[in-house]
Image 1 (tube, rainbow, N blue to C red):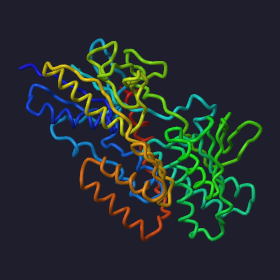
Image 2: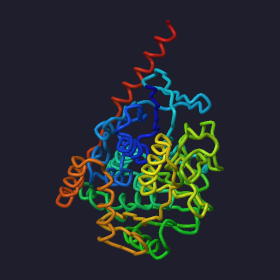
Image 3: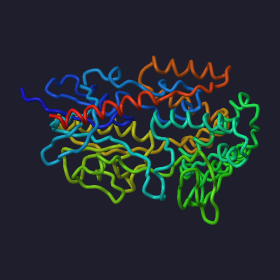
Length: 435
């Protein structure tokens, strides 16, 4: 019996969701092998990263190990280096060793990364896309409070207590809200720092923040954050990022903390696959999420340009990725079973933005929600996106504890692991040169 292989690239919402749905649809097809390839053995509920950064959630609890979430799929932890669409072969790298994997159907769900090409000097800014980003930012934020508390230099103290977020979309606003709330909660441990000394800036190049929601909700979000001392400026493009300095038109701001949250680009490996792409580098697919140039390749999520009924691509939102995953699995199963394909059609349920301190704004099915109810609705929705109840219970316990206790200010030292990695790399390089 000839076995066909479906390979899913990417361990995020889209990739894991597609693999899980394929398992259900093809559970009676032993002639079909499902393989999921991801550079990490977990996937992250990214909207929960903000609370993990502030310590409201234990960092590991906003992630789900991939292996327990799968039933019959084979999991491979590796980094995709390239895809030969003509030969239907994937090239991977794991711990310095290269390998290949052939496929009959390829599902590309590699996601996206922060766009570092728009603003000069972006490489010197912090980013906020991964668990590592959240941990690094948390460590960095606490370190700035420690340094400000210790210094007697007024200029240096001001720089340590100045925080800049670049980008006024969902990520930028939610991050700003969580950081301001975190500052309010932990300053009791720093009696030499007054809250009004801390300066939070957010710069957005377009004419408004939160373009994902209507103007009224964006105005409410601005008002809530402004009451915490945040300086939010729309129509203010950042011209350059320097180490501990941001330059805008006619002004430069010294800040030890600069976080870039201004747009994304498709994963580099997805951009390099020799299939049709759109102008933004996303894989061009038809309504069924099948590549317009290579029928054996499918794509979804942030790295794909999926046209809606109106011809416009669907936005890069988690709610779309979850549903795209199910539909692409149905279509691949349909091909295997010789059935017709169906296009992906989905109307946005709404958009939610947490602002910290149990506040949020949301637009759900055309209804505006603000304050506590919006915050509760957002939390509940993303809690249910976690596929296993054991993780959901851990998250609920974290939230319950956070109601009664302030977040701690423990930093996690990553230097030992970093040094060990460098030593292992040096040892491998020495071994390869002596062979």
